[in-house]
Image (cartoon, rainbow, N blue to C red; front, side, top):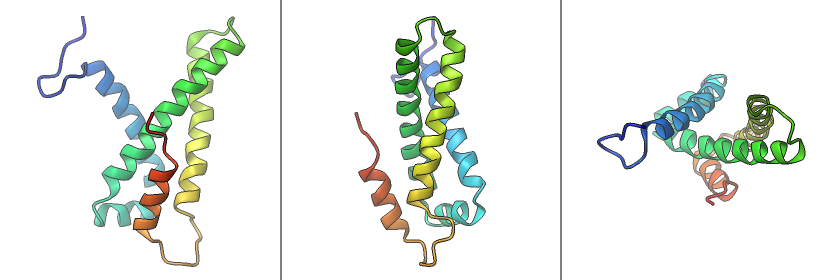
Length: 123
């Protein structure tokens, strides 16, 4: 039986899985210290992490489903691993589009957040 969190109506297991996606995105942002620091100082880090983590989770689940449909003989853990690699590449590309590393213009945080919201599926 899955324990229930006293402060949320979601099972703890679901929260742990969501935290893994957030951790991955946070590590990607930490690879770009200037961006990470800017987001942190502007108090936008959590919103950006949440948005990209949600996108990563959605893309990962979609790729898992596609891979297992295309190759029913594939081991589920192998499909999950391959799906995460593909989803991560997609999200990294989106991160680079939202926050170009060598943009000659100063980074507009509001424009970047708007870009993320426009390009993130809420389904």
